[in-house]
Image (cartoon, rainbow, N blue to C red; front, side, top):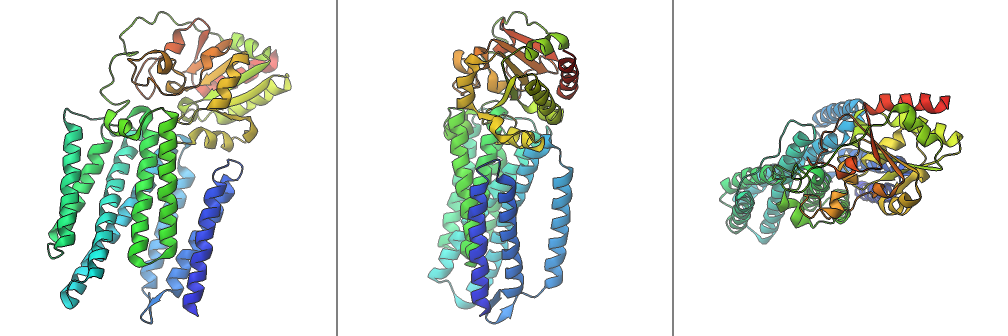
Length: 471
């Protein structure tokens, strides 16, 4: 009877994962979807602790289990509450890496159990199948862990892009040797040391393949590593014959893979080009990085910017990472409301890779209670720019750079952008003329219809609110 209840709990949890993932597809239901999936995971965890048994023996070790649960819950809660919105991408990378590490550790532990079992019973076909699952879980989980740690370091500025001639060949060599060792271990399981060789090579490969990748490709890498963690977790589900673990892993793996494909499509790049091209890394050359004379930019005063926006019919705000750094989303929403009161139509244009992870700007604006219907995706916004009086860019850079369309020598050439230059007036708020995350100059800043409004986004927006109110 308990087994049936456990199966029912796993079924309920699997359904909540699917429903929660579906709800995450809309900003309006995303928070509720996250809670639904979390509730399902809680059901699966406690059902496993209290109802699972093997050969009539339950888990036991409740003290160790609950100490681990409490420690993890406290750390996770504090981290989630204290993290700044600007640090959200790196927290996602860190937590994703922990999932990969968990999958890798499961493989190491279970292989040792299996090795003792094979000594007693001899090697069977069933053992060979388990070794295959263990090795794949170890390899993918280790790559996800070390790659996510490097991505985390890159996003918080502690790790710099690094590449050298022949690096891609060396990376492929590491991967080939790891796969060769995996095949040999499956054929000859008595060579247990090979498991640790695979572990080391996988960790090294994860580090080496993320190190040269930087700039606007980081959202793609995060999505890819997330899919790796899901796949590694799915192998753990196979290993334990755990349906809910298998379902959760497959959902995460599939969602991460689809998101990676969508990110690549949004940037007009193939995944191969992202991983091998090292876009945004140290090898940026040509194009807009100092190879041509840009001319002069012009500044606009706060009072003039307020005047232009107050008498506009339509204003589109383009949020970027600079808005997140300044924690200016609430001031931005206040400006929107003030302009609305003056009869100005205000919407937001969201680029798929704005910020440093998919959906970063959507989450940022949702935190400030910006209505979801005011958020326009790139294709919709690009149709609106031609009839827009003023575009206010807040800390965005690479996603509005016309070089992506006009300069074949630019590293971002071919990446779809928000075509803000089609508007009548463009106002760009930045701290300085420093290049964006991809490390390249922006042609937009030097165009005749563009004016620069320098300063911290939060302070500038607060001052703009006061100026607009006074008009």
